[in-house]
Each structure stands twice: as structure tokens, then as C-alpha cells.
Image (tube, rainbow, N blue to C red):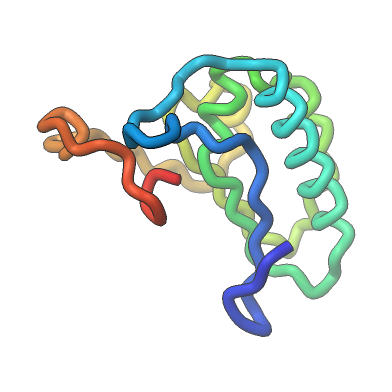
Length: 128
């Protein structure tokens, strides 16, 4: 766990996907990706037990599930234990229909223009 302030903590899971020296993203799914997704899900399960927590953002979780780094059923089991008072935000493309069914709010974003398609590589602090 790292902290931005006394009130904001964050956990980083996953491997470094920026290929060394060339600022390109590595899209391959490896065993370590699945292990890191499982580690992240364990962190989420533990955080659901924290009574002081009122907001939790799972960045790119939908993509993690879509790419089969994490099994949908495992995620849904953990989701079943979410405290009622906790605001849970799930980001990422390709949200599974079973996740969408459980959502209270769905916002869909689409790319109108992206610097990636103009040749800009992955940037530290933004993409990784």
C-alpha cells in the first residue's frame, strides 16, 4: 500500500507492461498477469472488511476480466461481499454483462481522438 495523503491509499498490482527503453506497451498475457490479478482480488476482499473505507476504485478491472487474467466467477464471489455503504467504481472496457446487471450507474466513454494512434508511446505516470 502507498499513500497520496492520510485519506487516500492505493495498491498497485500487475507487472510493468512498458517494454524497457522503447516506451511501447506489452499486450501479451502471461502467468504473472493472472497471479497479479489474483493478488489484487485478495486485496479487494480484504479492503471490503475495512469499515473506514467509503470509496474503492478498481482501475481497469473490466479489461482484466475480459482478457481472462481473472475469472469472472471469482470476481463476482468477492463482489457479493461488498459492504452496502461502499461506493465501488469499476473501470475499463468490455465490462461483462453480469457485472453491468449489478451496476447502479454505468457511464460509457469512447475514443474520439487518442495520441496513441498518432505515434505517442506509453508515458510514465499516465499509462504506467
